[in-house]
Image (tube, rainbow, N blue to C red; front, side, top):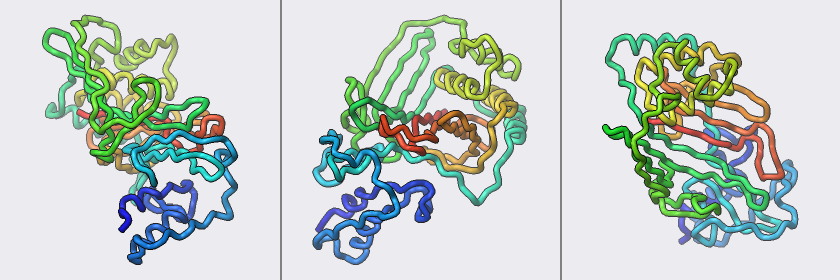
Length: 343
């Protein structure tokens, strides 16, 4: 009997606007046929030919463009830990899929404004029972790698930076995707994407003491004015930070420090003053944490910031393409990068 998981793994996501989209992980017609086979007990019978959609134009990658590389470990349908499938190419090849899928805002809750969330963060910081500022970081990231001659691939990694009492530090980077533990992970450690075992150590370094007092190495202040000046210096900007630059500067800060309650409140306060950052609603991030999403629409991309609804701490930051770039195999809705910070 065919492996049910192999049959399910042949499912490709459909566009976000497709009427069959429900929970953010829809099935196309081909996948529906495989699911029907499973439910009817016909998984061990002959495969039924998939029905080609008639309302969707043929994408650019279905032309006669030669064979695509196979990044996989099985001969039938291979879905790596990134939920990215790269199949052998040719006239009938499936497109490369950027993974993970964009975060989906839950429609059953009302958005929480940033001003209200900043007030909650201030209250949480005022009682003195919240976490303290800690040097170092723990971050899970997904980033889309592109080249001129290969389909885009998504590279999931986990990075842990810990500082020691003598001001030296250790940095550990591992290829892993917590959404699919135990399954292969793509990495480009040698410049070429290839599958490696889940949890494989990509790098492990120990650095000598550093006493730099320049942001972001120096401790961040916990008042809005001081933090604004700190982030401006860390971003190497001469003038005020716009919203995109502010989001980048916050990400840079979180890649160096695990914020305490007071620092998180200051960050939430700055974000509440940012122009164009609008509340979107409740989301569940890729580590299973509930948060409030705030969206900023830029040129060709959309940034989604995820904050804790209770204390205003930053949980994650996602960048999504809103325009297709056929030259690199990028489609509107593909995730460009995503970071999830942990305490």
